[in-house]
Length: 387
Image (cartoon, rainbow, N blue to C red; front, side, top):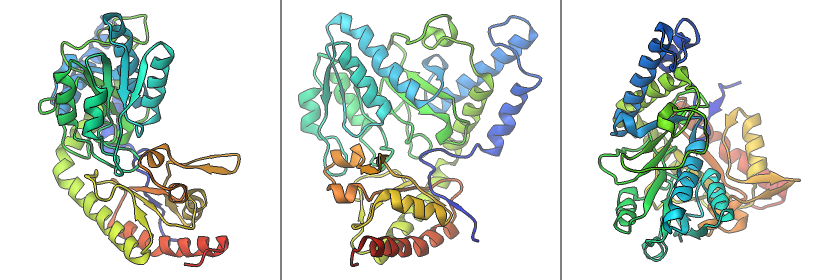
């Protein structure tokens, strides 16, 4: 049987060998608590401070603007609720986001609404790009925070974050971006974009699960969600995961170092995969294909199929992909992202996301090009659809 093909890098990535080597000593002899004053503690503190400096450098930031977290979801919750709870006392009554955000953002916004915030959703076009007129209408000086995902995790759309952040800033509104799918895939820097807060997750770039970092621009403040210590300058108290912080730092460095060499290769393979599938499946629809997209994401629907069945068939054939759809009690619910950009239900429930990364080779692409159309034909025959 051919080697398995992993096309789900947007869900998670394998821990890189260099990252594993960097973190391993902190599960052995360098086990100290960074808050302890003895030699073990000082050793851990030095490694933690160094990791913070390196993550900051990768983001074009300063070390005092970085706090380590458990990952993207915690970052997003801290950004939204931490800003809302602090600024509502100053008369800021609304929070703003888009309907195509990760559920970590949407759920945090809903929670702020339960606490009294007015929740506003920006309009997006058929590719998921924020409509300027909607931004200008909804992002006013009564808004505590506006959050827009830099790269959409399902369709890959790249938002003009620099321009949106500047517009928010001109209205005195805090601007947050979930950069979980952006960092390591497109150039970004706190020096060149005016965002106030940014979320980063380690397991999307070759670090282990359970580590992330939040960037909070100097002079910006959020109310912590946890209490009990002074770690991370009180923004996120609790004994720090030194090994994971070291791992994140190494992964972030590698992602930045390799951006200009690796991402063009990933984009070329993604584009080749798209071209070949569109040639073999003329009625296939690639979502957001006309918009600026990150190089690693391809979201495709073929009429007459459903994503649940296709993902199972792909898996049985040794190919791992994913979908934004949810299956509950045997019914497939379409992705909220695809619904928001106006994709018809019959296409939305057929969407398959293929996300490329470190495990992807031209041979992987060729295998999927040969396999996917055959599985589509089989699925259509079983469903009684004439192709």
